[in-house]
Length: 110
Length: 115
Image (cartoon, rainbow over all chains, first blue to last red; front, side):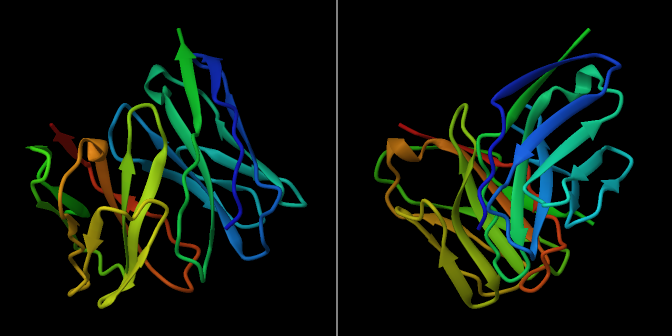
C-alpha cells in the first residue's frame, strides 16, 4: 500500500476555499485516492475519491496531478462546521487494507 | 438502512476481563474491518475480513481476536483487557476484493476504558 503525507494542520477563513494537500508519491496504477474527515471523535465520514481524473461532488472537489503522486482536496466555501481532521488514503482494488495516517487538522476561523 | 451498527457505545472493564465488541452491517458488504483510535492519533487497523470465514491481521492485532461467521457480523474479542487497550474502536465495511472503487462506511464507535 502506498503511504500518504499530509501537513499536520491548516487554517482557513470562513467562506474561503480550503485546499488540503496530500503527497502519495509511491502510489500504484490501480490505487484509488480517498478522502475522509473526522469531526471530534465521531466515525470518519467519506468525502470523495478518484483514480486519475479530477472529481467533484456536493461536498468537495478532488484534484489529482497528472503523475498521480499528489492530490488536493478543495472545500470551495469552508464553514465552521468543516473544522475537522482530514485523512488522505490510497487503496488498491485487490488489496483490502485502508491505512490511515495522522491527517490534517483543518481549523476554519470566523 | 442502518448502515454499520456498533454496540455498546461505551464500556468500562477491569484489567483481565474479557468482552466482545459487536459490529453489524446491512449493506451486504464483503469487507469489514476494525480500527482503534487513541487520543490525538489517527486510526490503526486491528483486523479485517474479506468475506465470511476469512480474516487477517492489520497493524495492531495483538490482544484481539475476530471471527466472521456471517456476512453481516464481525465481532471483536478482547481476551484479557489491559489498560493499553483503552481507546475508541471503529468498525467499517465496504464492497470487497477487486473493488477499489468502494468507500469504507464507518460505525459511530465504541469507547472502551480499561482500569
